[in-house]
Image (cartoon, rainbow, N blue to C red; front, side, top):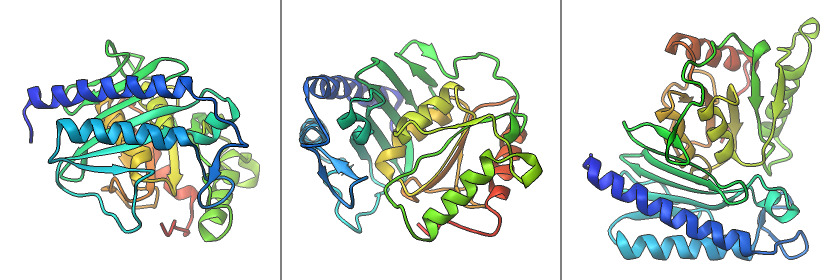
Length: 293
């Protein structure tokens, strides 16, 4: 493990880079016309995504030449997360929001060591909300407000009293899509039809900001299959430092991988037992089906 001083230095540099990225994002003028698609029309990329990632990569390589880098726009199929010190970057999480002018967008910068999230920095340029954390040092909003926002979190009382986040992703057909659609329908359906009757669902269009909302205690739970390490690494670090729990979206997966593509997050409650009960209730909603990511 690196020293607290070394980790603080990395954290502070990531905050500096995130602010540079935010300036670039705010100066951009994206649209659905100028955006390019990657896999399909729900998987978009802009020149700003590429420019921000280039800036981030160059800045990090200049200061930390021996550390590895995993970025969304430079990812090569088959590339694996290393156990070595690794920076993980999503230059714009929420690109579809970005091109439509919806201000739920962020730059997400994570740092992992031994495959585990150690530092997280997430900044929404449009709201100026900065979420950050260092392993064993807590998680904060705008560097000074400790997360979760409530010093005494409300108890976790089950899915029927929960505000739950889900995302739709760009996979819109096949077994994984069918599982997601069935599970979401069961979450929102009434008890009389075998549903969970959750308070409601939220889809922010940014997994990183979903993690932050769970860390803040604004959302109770986030369930997702199909996103990537760059979507979650920073948010995972922040959520755990805020007392939250991250497990596999598939039942029984108490030890998930950062690059496992399946995530279930629960906010801090009154006890770990409460969190585990919420996890198991969510797993039960899936029945015998499993994501195959």
